[in-house]
Image 1 (cartoon, rainbow, N blue to C red):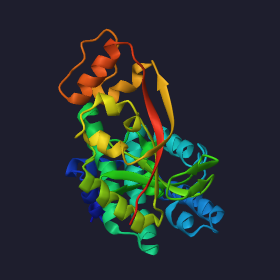
Image 2: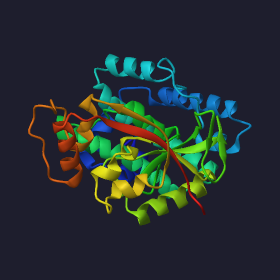
Image 3: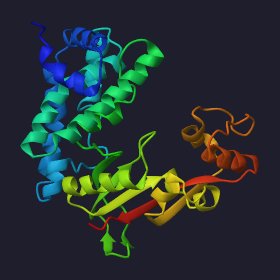
Image 4: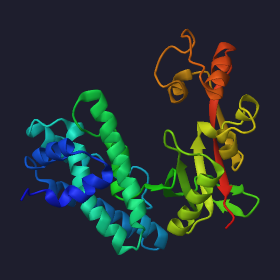
Length: 305
């Protein structure tokens, strides 16, 4: 029997094919994955100890920003991959899949839904398949971000990705209550191609409340940019998403680099003939043509249960 056959349910949940399994097995046979796993999860133990007076925090990885220092895990892992002549992206995919066994134990210990575990592990599979499409072998290019699903600190909840975090502002009146600095809020990340229909969002918020026990949702995103009200049609899913949030502050810039999210590639947006297949692309193409700024906003929403 293959030494790493116990990983098959996990590669299956991630949606990885047989070829990926063979590549991961080969990598794991050349490194001390258990030692790397010990380093990785020892950091989590320290974070939980720091959060012992906050039950949701201890349960769900309420970690200080930058808690995973380079020397604690990433640096030793890179050295191990380099010594074995393993591509770092491929190496990190292998060890993160290997770590998922312990991550599932954490989910079970705290009674977290295994459906959320499977969905979160699926993010690793999406990244690996995208990497394969570009390079011809399986890897995890954005491994610093992806490791957050394994700690676990970041969770795929319905159509959104979420984590528990500390409210960073001194004070804000939400209309439903006052939030103070360091109060727990659920931070939202909207992945590419997320379903932003009202039914999908409501399902995500309800599941998130059962997971985190916190009704306040915090986002710092280009999706909340207030001019979208004039730029996009009333039935736009982006407008539906942003209208649920009270804006705390807005940031604007004439640097158009962030438009890759809309046009799919990094180009000189001022000179290029921009695609205009969607209302969003047409609105931003017009904005670029007029030399208007683009931006983002920070917002908070209270989800009434």
